[in-house]
Image 1 (spheres, one colour):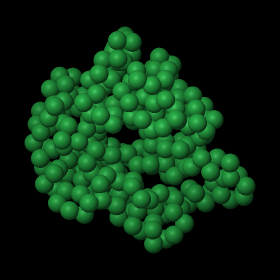
Image 2 (cartoon, rainbow, N blue to C red; image 1 turned 30 degrees about the vertical axis):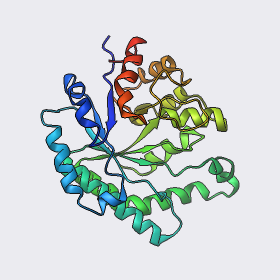
Image 3 (cartoon, helix red, strand yellow; image 1 turned 180 degrees about the horizontal axis):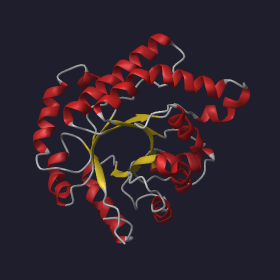
Length: 271
């Protein structure tokens, strides 16, 4: 039985060191330059052009991490929602220029929400409506350019919340992402289910995974093997998913990408 092929999240600075590794199996790549507001407001096309040149010959699936700093996608304030919409459209502009077919955005659900969302009967429906108001133009643009938006868990304590939200947005171009380290933090520090439960809950709505290891206390972005995530259980759950998610090593130190990949390969889980 074939094993999944790992990809990585890299930047313009780290792509050259991993170019051969990316091309040897035409691995999936997530570019991590275009969530920066200063770049999106500046000459981002020059940066994107350089990246395109670096990736000559790369035919793996290409994605970007969308903007996320300083905002949430469920703001109550219409003026803030307009700013968020603009930022995410800027991200899609970069994605289209690069030929990227996936953009990661962040879940709005907080640890506070887990305890307080059901305090008032309309809270959950209102979150959906606020997210729809923020993302309507973004989703329409994503559908036009063929770029899937995936919603990544951040503080999410109940993995079902994000999946329900993605489904409520009613677009074939909206799916969910799993960050294994964020899930492990939520599990150990806030009482969320284990990481493999996040995979099972998402099922075929899962089309993107950030693979990173943690101790469950902080968002370490360590290479797999350096923390305490039960990788065998995670990949066993991934083996039951039919949506062929991109498996992206998202590490704080990009130099550790191959070390992390080698650890998962040594466990017989991936290539």
